[in-house]
Structures are given as C-alpha cells and as structure tokens.
Length: 262
Image 1 (cartoon, one colour):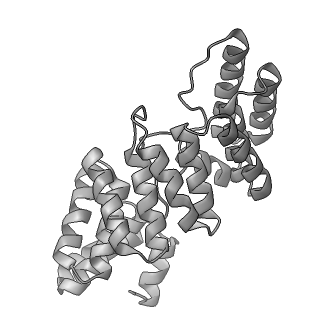
Image 2 (cartoon, rainbow, N blue to C red; image 1 turned 60 degrees about the horizontal axis):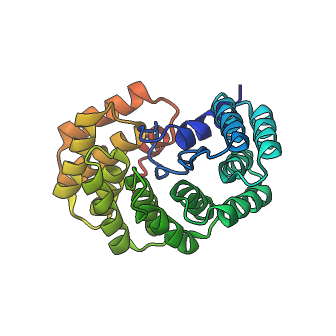
Image 3 (cartoon, rainbow, N blue to C red; image 1 turned 90 degrees about the vertical axis):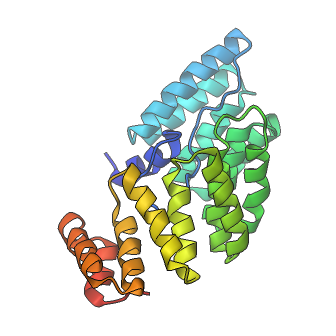
C-alpha cells in the first residue's frame, strides 16, 4: 500500500478527525457529498461512489477510479462521483484530470458545499490560493452544511499562504467558534501569534492543543520555539527531548539539530 496515498486520503475522507500533521488545513475531506439519491440510478451511483471512497482510503486508487466510473455509468449526472474522480486524481498528482472532474461536479451541483470545499482546497494546493477563498465561503455559508468549520479553517490556511494574517486570523477564529476542538485552527492561530510576537497568546493556543491530543512534531516544534522566545530554557529543553525521542528524523527534529529556530 502506498503510504503517501493513504496519508492523503486520511486527510480527505475522515471528516472531522484530527490529522497527524498540521502543515495543511482540514483539506478536501469528503468524497461523497450529502446530495440525496432520488432515483434507483442515483442510488446505484451513490453505492458505488461510497465503495470507491473506501477503496481510495485503502490506497487502492485504480479501483476507486473504476468504482467512480461504474457510478457514472449508472447515473452520468451524479456529481459526487465526479467529486470522487477529482479527489482520486488529486491524490495521484494528476492536476489536469482533477480540475476537469471538479468542474464537471460543480457544473452539476454548483451549490454543493463539500464539492466547493474540495475544489477550494485543490486550488489552494496548486498555487491559486486567492481563487480558493470564494469556494470555501460558498461551502461555509451554505445553511445545510453541517461542518462549516472545515472551509473556514481552509480559508485561514490559504490566507496564511497569501501572507494575509489578518484575514487568516478572522477565518480561523470563526472556525474555532464553530468547533472549539478544532486543533488545526488552534495550531494556525498559535503560528500567527508566534510570528507576530504575541508569545504568551501563542503558548495558550498550543497548550489548548496539548489538552486535546497527543502533540505532533509540528506542535512540539512550535511550542519549543515559543518557550525559547519567552526565555523558559527548562521547558524548551523538555520539548527538545520529546521531539528527539518521539520524532527522530522528522523535519522539525532536523531543524532543531541544525539550530534553525526561525
């Protein structure tokens, strides 16, 4: 099984879960949208799309693509199947095919919040961060969408990439109000506060993360640098020991070894 593919789909398919890393947002998190199946053809398409999503999660991209195609042979207008095709091609770094299928999905279901969120993340991942924001907002503001914290988080991450910390903070605080356990939003709020010299505030955000989950290498590295800025050498040393012990060979551990704190 391809570990990279599995990691990609763990981010994409497990809606509402906490991922193992914080380098991205909550991403394109669901291949099957909430679009109801109204006919027998749509029901068949839905079943094959859901099955394809499970194969994708297992790293079996070829079978996922085939299941999506079977779904479309049952109902050529079933938007979630195009969404699955797009996400699978995205996981395979086949950007042109991903784009084509996202466009087909959106043409069929322009208001679908999951598809809008997924396409927004695709744009953000492909250097089109500014273009991604309207799609995230379309998803977030859909009154039928049950997890608007996701697109707000993604908009925040993409705004960080645009070096627009003000907008990023607004999006991330909204995401956090909607879901106080959103550790992705907490991490990026800590990152912004750290870079702006608000180290006590940054420490509080990382402390909140550690109360909710076992910290990742990225969280530990950020917390270490915060304590370093605050002059707390003993706490800094504890984080350094934890990083070396739990994440040997990680990018953060290498930066620590090289003394590259900024």
